[in-house]
Length: 495
Ligand code: ATP
Image 1: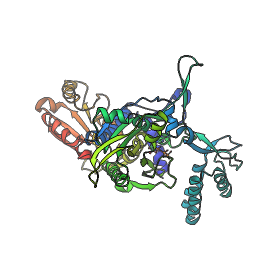
Image 2: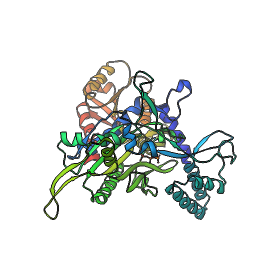
Image 3: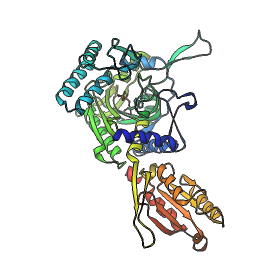
């Protein structure tokens, strides 16, 4: 059932200009996607929600836009060259490659679905232990013991499990001989760490303070799954919060709660979210939790909150030979200045594409519409697809629709458009029956339609139609702005 909905959401995203497969005319590029005319607007709005709540709403958090390319030593210091890999396994018959841990997770999900709770729990703890120990042989043994077959070939003819580095490498420099190997960044965080002192000094920032950044990241994921859930090129929104060592527990709790509240303000229902504590901690973390969202294919990670200690700054200091310290003039309980130290870091890291997918899945609704019988016509049944997006996130805020393309109606409609478009993204359309036009706006989530008809010429009124209730109301043109301003505002999300 939910899998069906997911298929419909993916098809809807393409049909209505939200997301297209990359290079489709050449049969797509695996796990790479393009955002269409409506998708780019929704994505920009989601990014703005994050940016405003992180940067604009916090006096002690500032933004940054670091380059995608970074000095190759960055990735040595961060641990990505040596440790950023996934365990992979190939099926010798289908020649398909899988993530060994994913195969086992799928098996656990199947046990659970079949009511074999004990088996599921047993395998889960064995998997956690194998990952914790980095025990590739044990991962293979579990795959064999649980008789996991390749979904394509149906055989259990597996290779050994090997580690596969997820970074994309390329060359920088004009001549091949002089070229240096550089990487496309696998996370935006390192751009923040290497600029930590630039921002702190130029912005006269005092600890605790944060640096926020949004931007592309690249990972050569072994297998691409679930549409824009796991991509090879994606966008992250990350914030590194620099704190005094020893205060990491309280700040970790603080950001964990702040981020959960941020998600819940979207209004999709608090039961859609849950925390998932990490058992296997990443090489840089002393505590880590995911915020998972209930996608149509189950609860999956949308955001990670990590207590990264001083791992990154310390390693950059060691490898670069440059001090990454902060001087803290505040006094401790003995009246002594805290002095110089390498700050600890709490990170919040969310994938914009996963947030986009969660938003699309939560907003997508199929509705039956029953128009009650009247004296002259029988009951009518109809259906519609509507995106119940919060108005502030909708690609278009208002559609302006002259009922007919004549009698001066387009002229009045264009006057309204001219006034509104400086403040709101407006859609203008003259063609087709009005009912059809309303449905098209429902399908892309436009919260308001303004229809101009012959009466508008007489008395300067229009019909405003509300997306969710489909109610229609006659209002003076002079009142449109008032209604829009009340409904389309960041205050509900940021206050
Ligand atoms: P996963 O376990 O799903 O691979 P991760 O734990 O490696 O994710 P992080 O390194 O913590 O992810 O990255 C932070 C966020 O970036 C994730 O919560 C997710 O929203 C997003 N993200 C990570 N990898 C991808 C990807 N391949 N495609 C889309 N978004 C991603």
